[in-house]
Structures are given as C-alpha cells and as structure tokens.
Amino acid sequence: MAEAPSDRAVGRAEPRREDFALLTGAGCFVDDLALEGALDAAFLRSPLAHWRIESLDVSASLAL
Image (tube, rainbow, N blue to C red; front, side, top):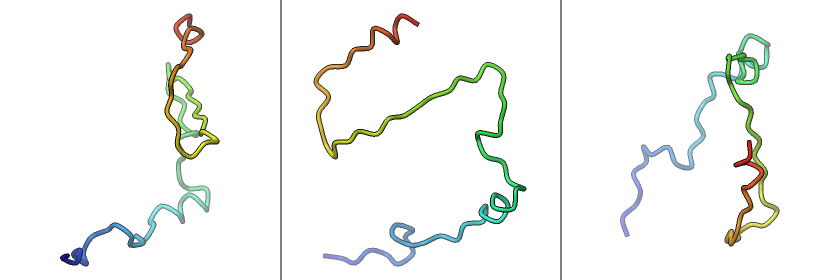
C-alpha cells in the first residue's frame, strides 16, 4: 500500500488567522448580520450515534 502524500491537509492542523479579530471584538460573526428577509434555522443533533429515519411528520411545517 502506498503512503499518502505529505502535503495533504487531512489530519494536519492549520493556523487560524481569524481568531485574533474575533477574540478582540474586531471580527464579525454570522449572528451579527441583520439581513432583511432572512430566516432563522435550528438544528437538533440526534442522541443516537447511527439510526435510520423510517418516518417523518412534516405536516406542521407544510402548514406554514
């Protein structure tokens, strides 16, 4: 089996350039943006590590 090339980014730490600005209050987070007509979204992570969705009731969402 051949070895992976050493110039690949997978598994290698990359220097983060945005940290200083964010930590000192000079950066901009997505939550700081106020866009007209923008919608909010929420994501819920499953408490199960791996599962198959067999049914999903979307009637409340469709009613909107």
